[in-house]
Length: 465
Image 1: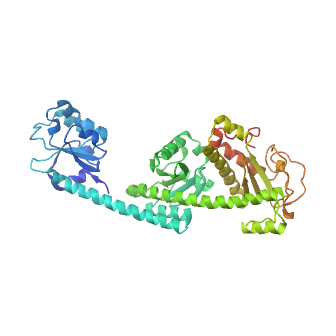
Image 2: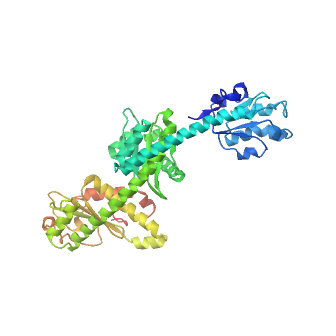
Image 3: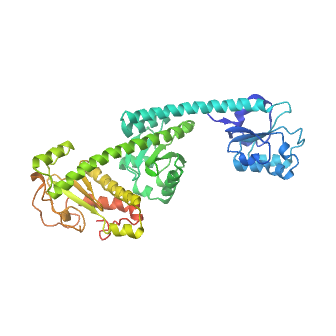
């Protein structure tokens, strides 16, 4: 626990100290103790440090005496302890006045009190607290790492964090899809309830300028941030939000909602460890998913191209993926027109192109998964092909599969017998099975950062189709 100036006044030589001014700052936290040996010492101070002096360094410098407390306030000093008798018999009125003005405790000690009598007990408390904090930090990290190594997944990590800090927790990916949560009864935050109900942050909230700016600061800082309420957006409780980072890539956001104030120090420590382990777990899951997606994508391509061999072979491959090919399916194609030209015009490097394609794939898969938990996806250079089961439906042209004006008329004809069927006349937009899913994909991409970057357009006549 942090040591305050008020608490330090009960330790060692400071018990004989007298607060001359700045008493309203006695609850400032002391992080360390330094001695003022020269005027330059102030420029070396860090926030929270307590300064000891006999005033030798400023005895002949009236300007330094006048501005000393102001300068200490500028660096966030915890206070000034002074033995003035030898070099500064009378403490200047400016020093006393500024101590009160800036709430910097000014404490006088008797001439016979040594620095060691002050420094030793204070530093002992600080170092012991740091050791305790370090041991606690190591234990928390070990606990989270153990969960990840045991393969217990994101839910277990989030639950453990919630139990540690006695608070509700949300973990969302970079597209604000809720990945895991821990619920503590009694939280009345409206946004929290909406996030749980919609399985992610509502579009209105994540598009708000204040939220965008706040999250940019969180990611840029790369450390947990204390976030005030945004009552106009339904965020009525304070939060601690940490970015989930893997190198330069932001994977998502981890939030502690309405934490108890007495656990704030623990919460700041625990969420940072949890975010690190979550990043490792998400990378692991992504690697596994990408391997599985490659296998699924190959199956989709073989089904549509008729290169799967015999029907027994393709059914065997589907069973290996725990996928049922015995029902009719619909094919949807999300295609970005002139993607190559767009990349050239904007001079995107290969890394940024890959990120754009990954984000498009994540958005399409995320929307599809909500309506069709079981599906197959194949990602290509500038398009994503989705195969979804449709009970009571028959396979149809891509143009009838809920996508507006596709560039090709690839028919779903080279597929197993259970997936084939006659192609009926094209229905009007909004009538075909899959149109609802296609529209959801449009709206999701339209609300994403891909549109703001110019990589896609949500309208039927724009690049995204």
